Amino acid sequence: TLLVGDYLFVSKYSYGYSQYSLPLSLPLFSGRIPSNMLPERGDVVVFRLPKDPSTDYIKRVIGLPGDRIQMIDGVLHINGQPVPKQKLSSKEINAGAGYQDQATYFRETLPNGVSYTIQELEKFGNKLGRNTSVYVVPEGHFFMMGDNRDNSLDSRDMSSQGVGYVPFDNFVGRAEIIFFSVTEDSVAWKVWEWPWTVRWSRLFNRIG
Image 1 (cartoon, rainbow, N blue to C red):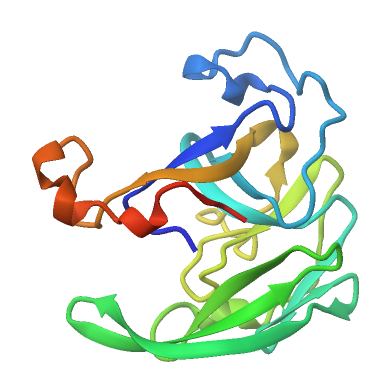
Image 2 (image 1 turned 60 degrees about the vertical axis):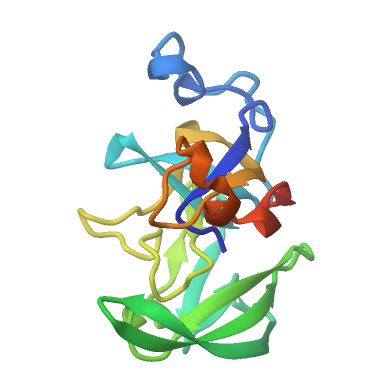
């Protein structure tokens, strides 16, 4: 799970180029060039929000075109099959505004073998995303979800304020490496504060 203050390298060439891969999102062409470099299930992707292309989001690819996606009691189902989910640990976390919450961590493993950690919250966060209807991913689109499952605005929200299905053309690139990281209440340009504000253990960690 990424943290506020992480700085990332994003591979724009992994999926070819669209207008959103270009500086200032210049509309020099439509579609992607080349068009056959498709994302894989489990990739962590930076994309432009379909309802507001000026906004970057970063989420994980869960559903491919034609997939049926559903959440049932907090368990992800892909094409009618539950995705294995193994409990790892629990701990108290800061939920903001002076509140504490209990976070539980699980290892989720997709059908193609990609495995990663997700977080669920006991008290706060949006629990509606733990039970959903069936989503059928349209051609040329992808279903994106955050690993912080109870605190993620993602494709489970099809409202006017949500993410919905994400067109492939909106993909900016695949997130690869955390190259720098500072604490949430810090800024990277204050180099004199680095000895105690840089999260040294997160530097050059691969994202996946």
